[in-house]
Length: 225
Ligand SMILES: Nc1ncnc2c1ncn2[C@@H]1O[C@H](COP(=O)(O)OP(=O)(O)OP(=O)(O)O)[C@@H](O)[C@H]1O
Image (cartoon, rainbow, N blue to C red; front, side, top):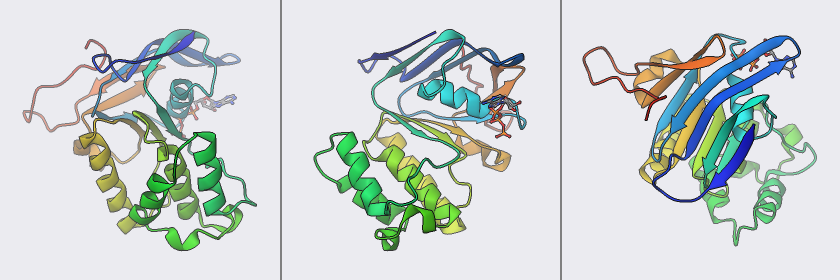
């Protein structure tokens, strides 16, 4: 299993081929394929325990796989289901430390996201004292801080109130317009028409489920482009 970084706009932003992952005897991924291009928004759907989070961790490179190849062209942002925050650090400290780790010249993007997601008032609050939804906002902000070309989001809107949820989708629209590719794990089947592709994970493999109502457009394949 190799993870490579490529440059060049003509290539897919994400290309995963024949990804396998087992936990002991439990074979979770059994040859998952996924290709995502600039500006595309892909939903990964599937039953509880199908392996969606496992897939995203593998794509993000935080979980070693047993077999397969994953290629990411450009910067990667990963927002795990459970926020990885330091409870004793404030929101502002998180932004500064992550910006420094990413060698960003300033905090402009972080400042914008505080306003877009509406949590600037918590700047001086420790992460450990934040509500679940606000922790998730910080989690998302940290994943977006360096303006990545590929964003991997594991159920990003869990705990968001309705207003934040709508702001989240505005944010995603803006990212897509700027050519960012986004993969989202979601259980919100009523939101299907927001996505270019629904990639259904079952039996350890991904297969396309049409995201448009029948007859509304040609069904696209995600494994053959
Ligand atoms: N670290 C681990 N060690 C052993 N088994 C694991 C581990 N992580 C996940 N699993 C198992 O792998 C399977 C897939 O888990 P995963 O969390 O990827 O599924 P999921 O599709 O994201 O589920 P959900 O919709 O409930 O979030 C499950 O059977 C789970 O119990």
